[in-house]
Image (cartoon, rainbow, N blue to C red):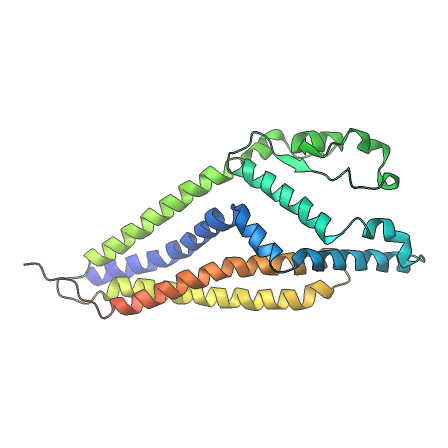
Length: 268
């Protein structure tokens, strides 16, 4: 009976451990400005992104019978500095709203840097910083309601609740596994749970690394601009997320192995 209880606890521990890793990714990486700044700025991402977009624009101009210089007004605008500034301001605005630190989701539109020939008459009402609701209204975009936008503001608080809940549940499972071991017996049950969970997480991180390498190799040279952008931006994000998985997974494997050689104290 005890063996069946331990088996159920171990099988339950594994998916909870994986969910815990996702919760850590969300709370301490994806919802943190420093993660995005470190991930995209350190890898020269914006320089590669600028070069890729400009190359695609010039190719489109040539394919349509023009010259590369015909889109110079656009290529001069899409510089690494402008892309980085636009992205950083918008991601910071999004995270402030998602974490409940702002009342509105503000969108940064660099209209002050866009050359006049590119500005249509509809842009005269567009400000450098506007709420997303106002911006969608100005462009007459349908299908996105204020209530849907407001849901974003709950992302930060909900992430804390999920992280705390999963962490407590994980600790409870470890306690129950520890309690299921008899006095003087080796802590094989909690060790097995940690070892298997860590091993599966390492496997998932390895598969994600292969995916990242293939994306970084194939997509940036794609003639399709969308695929090229994904191939430049997404791989460093995946790498940042998987680095955390590797730390936690390796720690779980090592701790799990150590517990196989540790005996539960005998009650006196």
